[in-house]
Length: 293
Image (cartoon, rainbow, N blue to C red; front, side, top):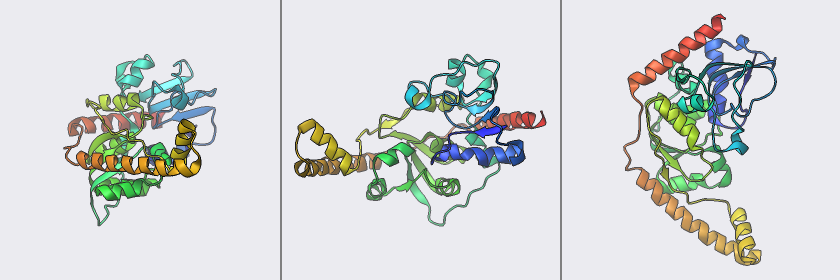
């Protein structure tokens, strides 16, 4: 059985081996892809190769087929143990009892990351695509007095920075999931239109929360990209388009810094602690059953 997930530089996806090797053992898996274990991530529309699929806490992300694929037909090739939330269950015509929670909530049950000596009052966790759009996010955060947590770094470092924060502003869903699991306050924020609301709502609904993000949408992009956009729209040459691009970027950065400072006034969110523990126990129970098969 092959542990199957999106293997990119992204914190949420990278949690799969850490969590499932712990609970099931590394020897539980091999490279035989005739049976795929689908774990953490919005991968149910992507992993459609032939063979049996065992689904554990995976999610679907409706509304963006280009990024997440179309909804699979759940047939005899699927053994669905549980899914991320009620919205995934409904769209796949699964009983709601299958909607437990995202497997990332299991981290605090066994993983005690190092707490840094320097605590961060506020941290920002952007979606990995947002970090690719603009390379200057760290400077923007410094101007706002906020620590930037880069989800492309290794899992241990990201975890350490989350638990060392008092309050995280999250564009990346798994940043919020892990913060919530470790009882770190979180506030959802959006800076770009690529954030998928369906998957956020799916997870929030699993823990009886509402997803109400604060939207900035002051799109920050590197100068070369902005210069090309202005050239295409105005037909101006580069030597004129670039100063205009720099002016636009400076103005947008000022707006983003103001937005980030406003977010410091938010009280933040946390799921109900008793419900979180109940969901953790339910997931562990399902993993123990799977291990005994």
